[in-house]
Every structure is written in structure tokens, then in C-alpha cells.
Length: 148
Length: 144
Image 1 (cartoon, rainbow over the protein chains, first blue to last red):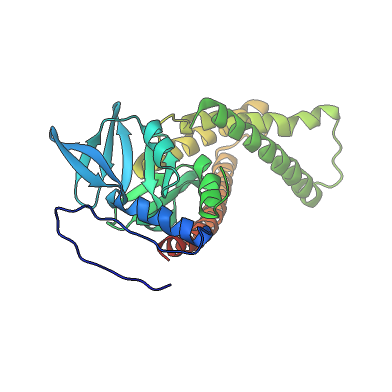
Image 2 (cartoon, rainbow over the protein chains, first blue to last red; image 1 turned 135 degrees about the horizontal axis):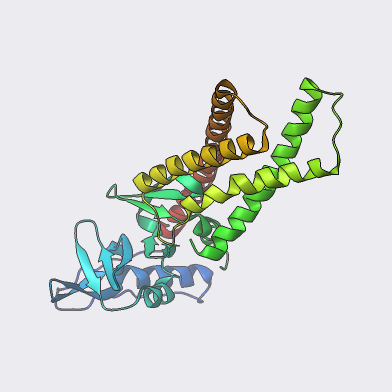
């Protein structure tokens, strides 16, 4: 497929137009990918509202009834419940890896064995997250593209 | 981990322990004292040993996800209580009598505990390797 790129002014909204003969699975997956890359969500950094690109989030964690989104070097408070985030974005590379944490699968560098049948996810920024034992089979299913 | 999951895990471990104790009694018995004969009550010993061995597992239960440090501390505590329970049990039943016997018994429990943990770590490592392969494919697939 021929690809054309056109630079636009900052005042305009970024968008993609796909010219195709039919909307097949390949086109659908391209559309799904484009939609996920630009998604913005609202987060709070010391009471100031900011827009965070969904794909920049490394993981989401619930601490003392508050939900935080961690990017490579910032932490934002989200005004939603952890399960609400999971329900809304589980199809976009986000996976519930423990009771209090949702991880962006695209930001995991590798997984290492941990004690008691758990795994430790090493993120691209070298932070480590625990994947609970009960979530490991679900993780494998998700990575294989099976329905959970 | 929820309490229900913990109880399920304990049940599974209990049956593994009873099977291993039964096998150990059979093998060691045949090697050390093959002419010995027992009554029906001897069938209870693996079940009781299993129960005594599973009780200290309560130390490892936590509703929250434990950190590496917390897990290691719990493991040490678990081993300590396991040894204590087993030593008290074998002395109470009269299976062990002297200090030297007790030391070798604790040493054997330690060896078994280490082997079990090494095997578990190895299985976990295999699982991690499998997940890493799947993860790599998943990420490549999504970027493509």
C-alpha cells in the first residue's frame, strides 16, 4: 500500500485518512492502532490537569483509594477507579497484572522469575512490577490473543 | 491472594506432601528395615505428617502483594515454624529421641526445603522464558 505523509500546522488536529478498496482485517487493525496511539486521557499533576497520551503510560496503580498513572518520568493522579480504567482500555495493550496494578504490555522489556510462582515485569525504564501468580495464565492468554 | 485461593493452594500442597511422605516411607522402609510390619493405623501417619507440615503455611498468607524482602522474611519464618512443628511432632510421637537425631532430622528438612524451592524457581524460570517469547511476538505484532 502506498503511504503519503503530510505535515500540518499545530493548530490543526492530527488525523489519518485511509483510501482502500474494502475495509478488511488489515485495515481494521491499522485503524485500531492509529486510534490507540493518539488517545489522550486526563491526569492531575499537583492539582493541575494535564493530557496524557495513553501509550506513554507504563502502568496504573491504585494506592489508598487513589489511582495513579506512571509515565517514564512522571506520575499523574487519575480521577477514575482502577476497574473502570481496566474495562475501558483492556483492549489497548493494558493488562491487569495484580489486584492493584494494570501494566502497559508494550512497555515491558522482559519478565523475570520471582518467588512463589510470581513473575516480575522489568519495564523499559527499568522499574519492576510484580505479576501475581493467578494472573500469569491470563497474561499468556492475552499475549496469544485469546479471549479472557 | 484471596483466602479462598490460599486454602485451595494449601489443599494441593497437602496432597503433594502426603503422597511424597507415603513414597518416602515405602522407599526408606524397604532399604532400612524391609521385614517390618505395620497395622492399619500406620496409614494415618502420612496424613498427619501432611497436616503438621501444612499448618505453618499460614505464615505465607497475605491479601496484599508481598515485596521481595517481605517474601524472603516470610519464607524464613515458614521454614522456622515448619522445623519447629515437625521436631515437636516427632519428639511427641517418640520417632526421635536424641539431640544428634534431631540435628540430622532438621538438616534433612532443610535440604528438602531448598530442593523444593530450587525446583519451583526452575519451573518459574521456564514460565518466564515462555512469557518473554510470547511478549516479544505480541509487541512486534502490534508495532507492525
